[in-house]
Length: 391
Image (cartoon, rainbow, N blue to C red; front, side, top):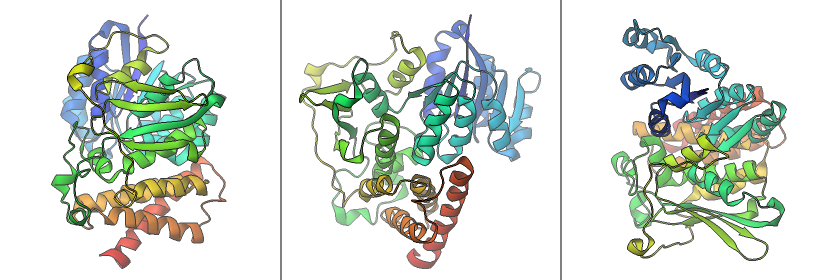
């Protein structure tokens, strides 16, 4: 009997890689829902190609355009935030959460209510509401599978191991577009330069987050939440080759490393087929040809996002939600040309400082309503800071 699957964020890079794997064995899957944003041509084409029951765009204004593209196909069409929630509550055995940003939190929580598997590629879900998400999974006897390559690597390294024997978890970072730039050039980095990754194409927002290391900051917090390790057990190494995705260090001094080509289909395929391993269309590493792997400690002056991540973990409470919202708002401003590359971290730091004193982030009750409220408030505060202090 085919497995029922839904893919949230189907038109993004993770979603497209997921659909690539599903399309290789279409008889094994029954596609329930596909969701996307503005790329309606891709969303409609994939919905038809894979016989999806429902296609959803997160933008209300795009409803009629998507409806027209799918006219006569029998595929249900919906739009808007409520439609995303409705789609997440459609019964599915396996759901991919690959919506970018805090917008992925609520659909992910709704999907967990089904008591099946949520493959989590959305970093912000655990950053904003980690304890709530894990509690939701436990309450509904659902399986939460990490799909970030780093967290999938840690998960795989821990199979058969006792987490109490873990001394440290090391996640790697490519270093992004500016890893070899002199510090004095970063203030003048352009949008085009920040949007070009040296190793892969993952979309503009993620690529810029890689250049600023905000993506790694989110992943550090995600590691803390998912694996329940202390902040001082988590390390980051810059690894330009992007072949070692993570390492787990144990109390006997051993390091377990996960290596693989920088292809997200590995982590996606692992989550899709778990607990089995199936053959995947990914490159096999030729270590002799590769020759060497290099690592270095990240410079937190160059990458202040990493320092801010540790501050967020120390604060706890709703700090993760505020951190992510301020980061998203600052990224919007950089893309719009309103602030410089280095000012993104300044905006986030100032927002956290202001909200810590004024809004009691550390001591606030952790609930979904409070997370969503803080998310909106942090965006407002970040915008006010940019209007009054930075531009």
